[in-house]
Amino acid sequence: MGKIISFSNQKGGVGKTTTCVNMAAYLARAGKKVLLVDLDPQGNATTGLGFSKGSLKKSVYNVIIDDEEVRENTLPAQPDGLFILPSNVDLAGAEVSLVYKKSRDKVLRAALEKVRAEYDYILIDCPPSLGLLTVNALAAADSVIIPIQSEYYALEGLSQLMNAIKLVRQHLNKSLKVEGVVLTMYDGRSLISRQIAAEIKKFFSAKLYEIVIPRNVRLSEAPSHGKPILLHDPKCMGARAYAALTEEFLKKTEGKGE
Image (cartoon, rainbow, N blue to C red):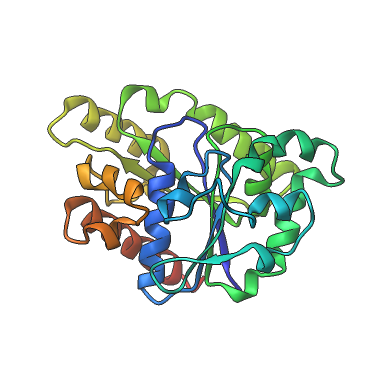
């Protein structure tokens, strides 16, 4: 039975999509069958894996609004073992359309349950907001990974996200938990980076992954080439960090027999 993990932070620009895409790629490289669900209307995960969201006929929109099957809208990606349920331009209007659907909070959950057994991991890239799309992702997930930028403003709004997770747990998905917290865009030479890391460690304790993701030009370049970092520059500092993070993630999850 596949594990469903949402990557969420309502603050934009924290490395959420970068983390989701690259962990998905490294999980596939590790021999896992992985489905990446691009639930962000910006479609950055879709373009980051080499697909043009403007020309796609298949998308997550067709699944959550038109009640089409996940299988009918999934595309194979690289590396082998990675698949994507992409986003396209239609998703921008999905929040409004969802309002009128029955069980609107659990539409994605119902769709993913049908294919959960076909994958080892299903990773959902959430939009940078706490609207209906994110609520759907949290309602569908077993757990949440929270990427946090190691800058001062990163801590602002964190309580809102934790409150949203608490509300979803109370009303929609009682088994939802925080899988882990990833510190991104880290600069060990910066005092503020070290201070923020210490604050986050205090707040999340054992949930904070030991591996931190550094600021890295090659990581920033990779999406413009439509490739995860392991296919763009597997030897760069950012690639090594995501490889190590994925290894730490697998040890924590599969080491517990999950």
